[in-house]
Length: 76
Image (cartoon, rainbow, N blue to C red; front, side, top):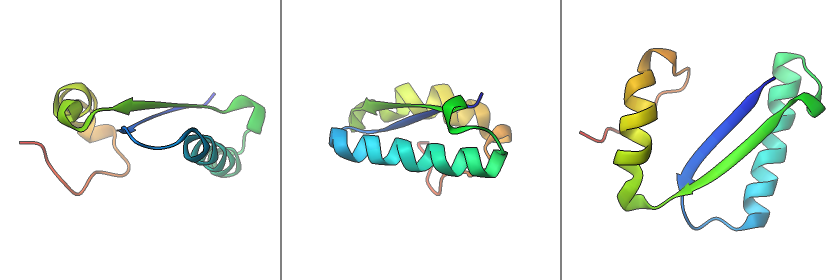
């Protein structure tokens, strides 16, 4: 606990993804009061043209009530 899943447009380098995962894990461990060794982070590349189908429709739109940070865009 906890596990964080990040889905983003393709194009980030492995170095960027590793840095992002480490920084997010650090903030999550500090904020939630858990050990860094308890935090896992997955980053999945999603082509921009597949975003609505693979991310918006399946994760964002269905989970609006659970989002603590909502996006400032829609895919209507």
